[in-house]
Image 1 (cartoon, rainbow, N blue to C red):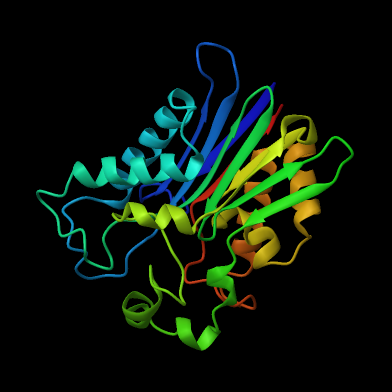
Image 2 (image 1 turned 45 degrees about the horizontal axis):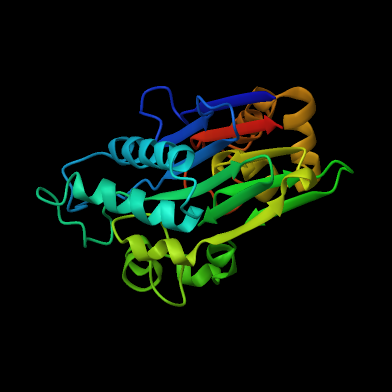
Length: 262
């Protein structure tokens, strides 16, 4: 097995709001990959005393522990329990019903000798590559399907679209959103390698159109996770002033890539 992990903040002077991990249980049987992208709140009240990194660290830690220790639970069940556990850690001090309460997107995978399970919530991305080279993207495209006009202001997103029917869902404080995740199972022999990425890394394809998903996966597989992040940074810097590529609220974003060759 080979693993490669890079998680880098968008700016050196602020904390990385992503979380990344690879879990390999002591039994040596199977493992897991976790990638979270903390949702940066706009300036203003969030109803919470805690930062986004505080939230993603706790949610990511709970997901890693539960995914490797509770093989009797499905990934949606694990996500629901991890959200509930994290909410319990600050429900006494924070207003968790606030629409801007700390939250994250999720990419999660678990493998055993027989299966590879996968789950994606919001705009994180997961890719499964078969022995014959076929690449299967696992994406939750609800946010991408919303009309651009609907995303014009953060206030509108919070009020009408975030964690609402007809909008999109993130892991915040409500365990029921786990049922909204894109999830499934593939035979273990059908997956040779997999990669989990936050949207700061998928910009290479989604925002800058440097290559399709297969080309992105090839960069990670052949040149390494660092190479993809470096390419994203180059494109971000080159487009800093021109902003020819729309849909970027900030020049640099936290970028995480986790690659596993099974």
